[in-house]
Image (tube, rainbow, N blue to C red; front, top):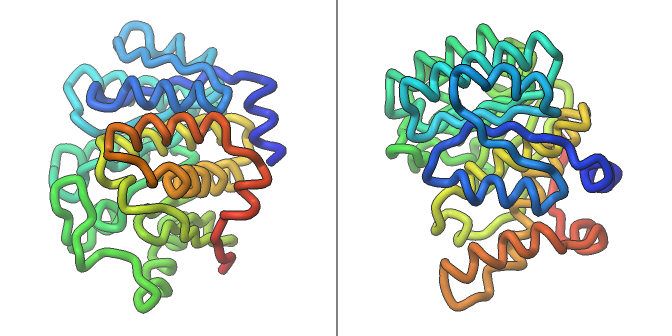
Length: 265
């Protein structure tokens, strides 16, 4: 919980280059945990903005030529200045454009965290995936039965890239190749509103700004699941979205400790 308090005290500047579908919710999530969001994406200013930021969040959803150019500029600036950064591999399982771009970005920018669902991560690793648009395919879902083989794949990817790897799903897996966390928090309603994956990327960017990459990532993933659980008993999806942001702002350390469900492998 030291990381939570550090973010609230220091109010880090979090530069997010994300898609217009979820940009407002991503900014509000950063604010909810104590950070200060900036959502700049013009190619002529992003390097300067990234250089004065405390972390960078990159999201491949709804990409455009300009945003692709800006993300690469920002990613290189973050790497050169040792600024933590996370990339969300949205849609690389269904788009060659995004897959090729992700490979280029990761090889040149060396992000601190690589995030995706298991279909996206398999596609990035050059494996056959069962991606359904931007969603994980049924054959790629992490289960108790296939968790060991998927964990091994994620550990290898972490070793290869030097990044913390996050595979999201009913069971979230986070690994730096040495330590692997399985997070079992969450609820179905998180998949019923737009942009919760993007919001999680913004949360990861916020919490890795303290430079503790693995612990910051674990905290972000667990918090999204826990806040989803305590927000789900509402009238509908619109109310859920509001409750999710409210609970991210107000959830106590005691509730987190009580409700977190994880295994260390």
